[in-house]
Image 1: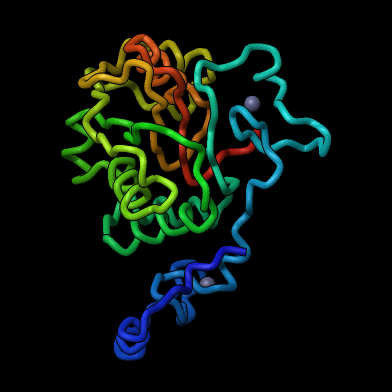
Image 2: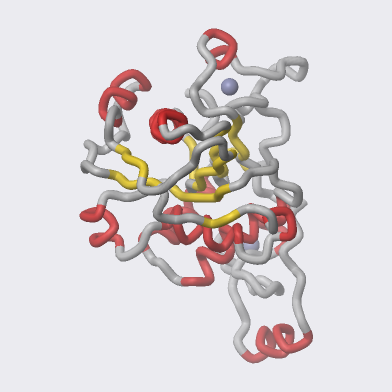
Length: 241
Ligand SMILES: [Zn+2]
Ligand SMILES: [Zn+2]
């Protein structure tokens, strides 16, 4: 159950004057954020998942997924508190293509309320967008999420936010429709480092993790720069196809 109902007295007065409506069901949200408690509690929590890549697992006794057992990815650990489902998809799509601050805050608050104690890291950064895509969309959703996750999070007080650490030096073909191997080929050499990360534990923030090809390529780039450990933090993980 996700609780995003921490409201001050002033916020409660504001809610009464300007009621928020739930993005998913359309009813008054009765919270500071545009999601009602019932819809929040129905979001699919990614409780039993691979301890390395966060892939939802069917077997209650397994701790690693098949691909991680056969060929461990370069990324060391993935934090993905929810499973990707139509509700999460709707929320993320609305935020990406209608960049209202309250949508970004909602996504970040869902992550923060589910990840009270993030794994210890030294640096928090985000997945870079190619400048052309960023210009078309008007913002980088991963950077916005990283900023909102990091700001004031008591578990991240000892880490630094460094949004410009990674740079996407070439636009890559759209990944949808490509298999894992083609995705990995498509991304090879797409990222460069624009800062230092020697001997540091780095968390890269993204909205959703699908095949992990982008995460792995970013981890390759960070480890080539000396990073000791690379994690990916996202809101949701897609189940195995
Ligand atoms: Zn609702
Ligand atoms: Zn795995």
